Length: 65
Image (tube, rainbow, N blue to C red):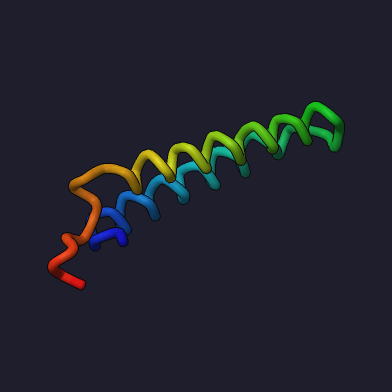
């Protein structure tokens, strides 16, 4: 489970990713390429979030449960 700092980092990461996608996709027409782009970004965000979640400093210690 994420501690408050981990949650803060996760929120900042997801907000930045969302802002990036919104900004970049505004100039794209609906197309196969845009769909592939969004799929790859979704994959990247998944692994980025996983990396943040796996950081030892971002976990609550087991004794806190």
